[in-house]
Length: 324
Ligand SMILES: [Zn+2]
Ligand SMILES: [Zn+2]
Image (tube, rainbow, N blue to C red; front, side):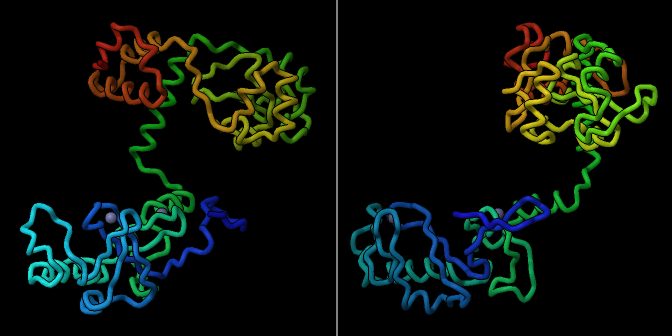
């Protein structure tokens, strides 16, 4: 489905043409058990109408759901399956009632992720279509709110602080000290992003950009350092280079620094696996701080999993951390 090309400050786009007021009925095929979705529009059905009139054909196996159809259950006595039996009639009444009895029985399509989801997957929006639900599902709403209101929880802040501390520990001995004069010479004394001239003696007006961020476990080295004004660097922070520099800038940057152009222009961040994980783990577990050892083990385990570094651990450390 085509995504609408409008300027959207969240970067999370709605899909055009989704009838987001419409109610849907979702049911599992009685014969093959596949999920089926019936778009019923803005007029909800009553169970009575559905029982009398509905003819819902399974998209997978073609079985028709209607009170005129024989049931397909081979674990029932044959006479109970017959459409003109009381058992079959009662079954069909229940079947259509489940799907249509309350507004909560209905489903709806999210116009962001396009999934058809049950009533409870959407938050309330009064006087808005027959179901009075918002047009995006609660998962998409959560993502949109995160962009509009990027306040992070205490726990998330703690987690990112832990992550940063672990990254620093892992890189401690790999970072090189940068020769400022050489840096200024190579970058012609200018901010690489804004091109404004910088004064090497005013240390608080410029910064060294860690091109490939330490967040992804890249140490600071000559080929990983760029000269930026303080404010440009604040915008860059620990963004992956291709999310901050233009393609032309990335090419120039590779020329100046010798950075790997394929790596810095990768669309998505690539974790550096070429580091000494075992040494980092040992250091982290030796650090004296308030948090106790079991807690730190838990923290570093999680980070190693997120970073996909478990396989780089020695057998001894795997055992120590409780990885199989
Ligand atoms: Zn079916
Ligand atoms: Zn959604």
